[in-house]
Length: 377
Image (tube, rainbow, N blue to C red):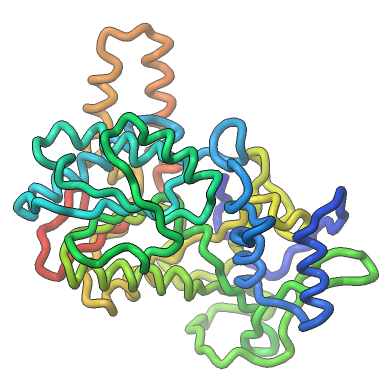
């Protein structure tokens, strides 16, 4: 689903349009009225527009959707995350009340598996109240169904900042940061200029453009050359800072899992996916998933600036193995038919194999400055 970073500048794309797209018309009118918009604004509008946004209006995850996330690959993923948090709760002295917060919970598969595994540690499930940060009303319904038999009634929020800041908080964000808007800058004439989305009336389509004014920010990229692209995500940094601040104030821990790199890195990582295949990010606004690779170095700096401590990142494969991936698979495979065992092995390879999700995906944990080391790190 996620290509490796590619060095280079703006790529040629097929601008052809098919079918009626009301969000495209709205973007065209906005750009014709006010001028080109940043890549970050384009992503934000395409993904979260109240009327036509990708996440706000559609069921996107699963084999019948556009992509599959790790919890949908195997129940083992969510179960190991549940054991991770149950173990950390125990290391903190088993506080009587905690908030379990998931950012972008998808269909609710991860939190349902997490809660099921967490019941193995007495007292952990009883201490939890669940807060889900989700803007999609469609996905909220799916999450409610997934948690129907869990014994927990979640509370939904549009923003993490709306979660009450009154007790230790355990935050899980799996493939959440990759969907936060990114800004892109193109090197031109020895300086950096912001990449924008413009309207080309001759082609009747959206197109990439570059701002005339030079960006004031200083990117330390001595090996870059004209045409290269570098990215930044203020939205991701703000979220990491908010989570870090909450943990520093009230205790707890966070776990961020996503695909990305330790920056800064030169490369254009903006991508679109539809029906499990790559798509043109400009051709069908609101109808495709838009993401960018996550700069874990920036997340660490943001959390540290909020006086929280970071652990890792480590590769997803190594993280899951340290949590007991193979042991859990062995338990599930016991006395099962060979075809079931083969399926379990294939799922584990997809999650942890270096040529699949195991290396590109990374895990980063956050705790208080004096908190114990979390499992897996």
